[in-house]
Length: 210
Length: 172
Image (cartoon, rainbow over all chains, first blue to last red; front, side):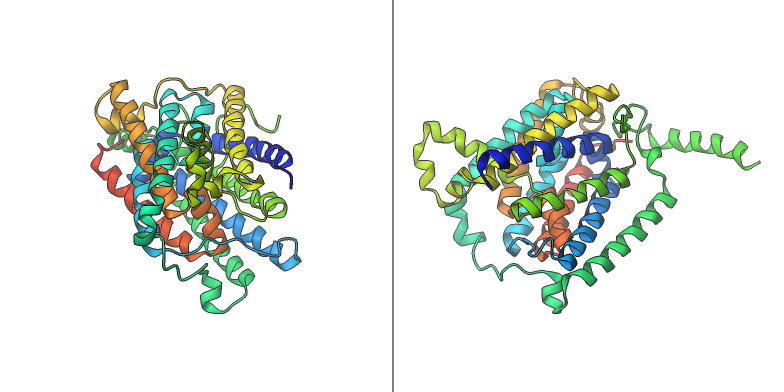
């Protein structure tokens, strides 16, 4: 694929991705910090839904031959544990992920532009430090390990089974606490303090039960 | 049209549609959705103006050219455009930092938020590049491919995110 075609395709896919991230509200810092404090589960709902549908389409793609080859990343225990942990610290402090920061910029959050500049600085710093870090953290990969590879099974049955488990979990999550209750008045995931919310729920629940 | 004027869609529907974006990514580029390596492509391309020697770094040079790298840069630019359109149509354009920060940080100071935003962005991308992926690449794409790297990185991300969030003030 030529670079121009790739950029055109990226823009189209990106616009769709951006609309979906914005409509899902997962780009809201209130949703992210709320999730990390286990007070708001909108992020987990979106994340697990995206994983479940990805599992299904990749399984179907493999079965039909439309997607002949997957592209899993190599396992690097130290780098993924430490890098993942640092990324998690950053997710909370930034109130977003590398993709959703751009969504925040598009939605207008002024601080997101600064997060973006910080992100570019972090990525560039890593690029310059990579030769130093490589012998310590970025060597000795056991390869592109996958669960189906370790179990010696084809991808699709495991993927479809896992997707089914996720769908049941999402269904249970919605029964436990409907997503709309976590949206907040301004659709930013910022919810009233817990005590007041409980009182309000009680006041609403009593007449409903009569 | 298409519910674009609504402020929020069901997270299950929006999430499932995000997962479907894996199909064009694999069919046209043979790869999965990701976002964090575009930060290397852009920052290293800018750095090249002042430091042409950056091309000699094998890591940076991997991300400087090629359809896949610039596809991802276009993807994240598209995200900003899509978010702008979506927020404009639904009347949820933002300006000041989210009110969640006043609660989590215990201060309304914009300077404090800006400082933390820079630090957060820096650690986020440094960590994501060290781990070789972010919430998209390791999260929605890695786990959807049953990659061991995805499960490890996502577990570590939640550990780091929860540990940090617990040090902040409760947001509700």
